[in-house]
Structure formats: structure tokens, C-alpha cells
Amino acid sequence: MKSLHRQRGMSLWGVVFLTALVLFTGLLLVKMSGVYYDHQTLNKTIRNALAGQTATGFSESEFFDRVAKNMQINGIRIDLKKELTYDKRQSPPVVVLNYEKREHLFLNVDVVMSFHQEYEL
Image (cartoon, rainbow, N blue to C red; front, side, top):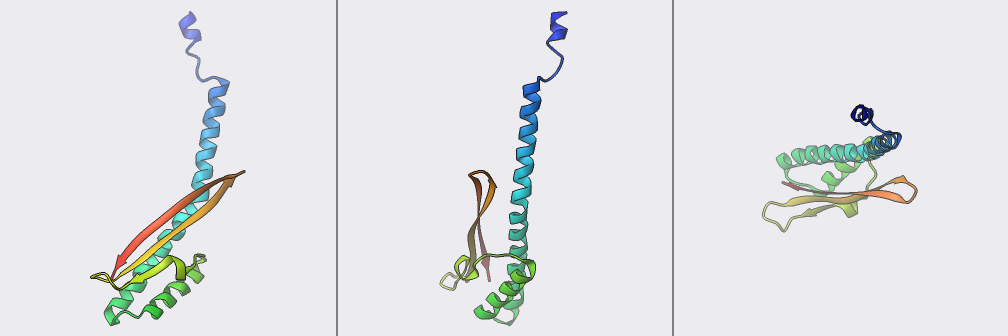
């Protein structure tokens, strides 16, 4: 009979720990998903702007204007002049997107997400 008594299930502390773990994972998912969605939107915007540029020849100012306009429409806030660079010294010229986003979780805990993407012309 004693072996059946020990197999009743989780204790109260086990349920509390599992609930806290699920809530923390949900909080991470909610806070980080917006930043990753913005990055995917920005990635698609840059790819579309580059696809339009390669057919007619690359115009750096037109490319940056097109990306900035799409970022404003989609509500993405990063500093393009600092985070998006055009390197024409490499063999195929490369546009590099390199930035970090910091998202506040709770109290004094933040999560830092860094993104680095290179696009060849």
C-alpha cells in the first residue's frame, strides 16, 4: 500500500514550478516574437528593394529611400544610417544589416537580440 501512496502525482511545489515555467516561456514568446517579426519584414523589404535595383543598376540613395519608406509604413524603428551599410569594395558588392534590439522583460531583466545579415547584389 505504501507504494501506491507515493504515486499520487505532482506535489504542490511541482505544480507551482511548472506554472512559473510555462508563464516565463509565454512571456519570452510574447516579448520576442514582435522583434523577430519586424526583422523578417525588414529582411523581405531589403530583398525586394535589391531585386528592383539589380535590373536597372544599383543606386544607393534610391535603395535606402525605398527601404526607409517601407520601414515607416510597417512601423519598424531602427537607424538605417547606422545599422545598414553598403560595402562596394567586396567582389560582389554587399549590403550588410547589423543591429541589436533590447527588450525589457520584467524588473531589471532584459533580453538582447542581435541580427546580422548580408545581401549580395
